Amino acid sequence: MKFADFHPGQVIHAGPYVVTPEESVAFATAYDPQWFHTDAQAAQDGSFGGLIASGWHTCAIAMRLVVDAALHDSESFASPGLKYVRWPHPVRPGDALRLQAHVHAVRRSESRPELGILEWRWQLFNQDGTQVLELEATSMFRLPMALRQLL
Amino acid sequence: MKFADFHPGQVIHAGPYVVTPEESVAFATAYDPQWFHTDAQAAQDGSFGGLIASGWHTCAIAMRLVVDAALHDSESFASPGLKYVRWPHPVRPGDALRLQAHVHAVRRSESRPELGILEWRWQLFNQDGTQVLELEATSMFRLPMALRQLL
Image (cartoon, rainbow over all chains, first blue to last red; front, side, top):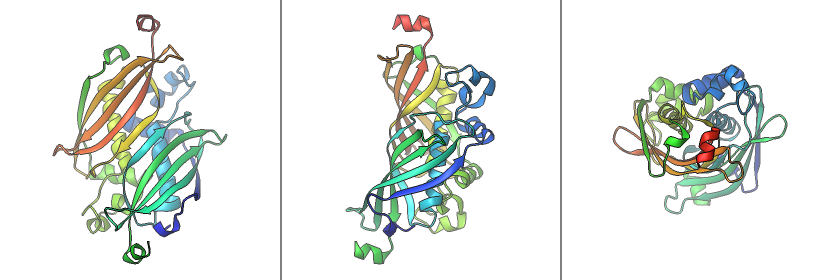
């Protein structure tokens, strides 16, 4: 998609992304080696009755789905940050995650007119329809001259 | 550290974590395959004059430093989310990142007294002292009975 293809109210769907046990444990072993992410036997007796994925892994999966569905062929070049992140429900190995991205705002930067700014909410749902991730992201796009003049 | 070891005003230091080019490209190839994260030649001509790490990779590195410095031997078991995330400056392959975690609040959940709640700000700085990440996280701890009675 190009920056010009985004509009407020738009909903972008992507997935499913199936979280394998191997990938979940590998991610956590590298970046979030807490026992309930990495030790299946200990996790059985833990709060969730089994392994859960790192919340950062869930975020990374959302990013992958957003890149594949919307950013891979865009003018996207950076993000200044996220308004918030919520992990309302654990992700378990074997879950199949689907993305819904709701576009809130599409505008040109007032201070840097070569920049397009997108504000959108990303949500991931598991195979039962339970929400496992919600965040609001700001994405920045480097606009081609022609589009800049149109806006 | 245990939940009882945290107190408001506390500052926890960790690192450095050196971001190798191989790890940076591998993370982005899996989770954020935008060209300025994965294609060194194209990135030379891009906005940053070279490859930069995925912001999600930067977050994952902060988590790893937090686990190693504070959570690995704690009662931590989950996080409901983050108040915000900011990526004020790009991370480049070769950067050596250091963590500062500032403890804001340490309290017991009113609705679930077996839960300890920690609110803290995580910042990563590169080898030049430039801030590359800031976020505010909430972490939850399952308190042992004795500590619960003391609070």
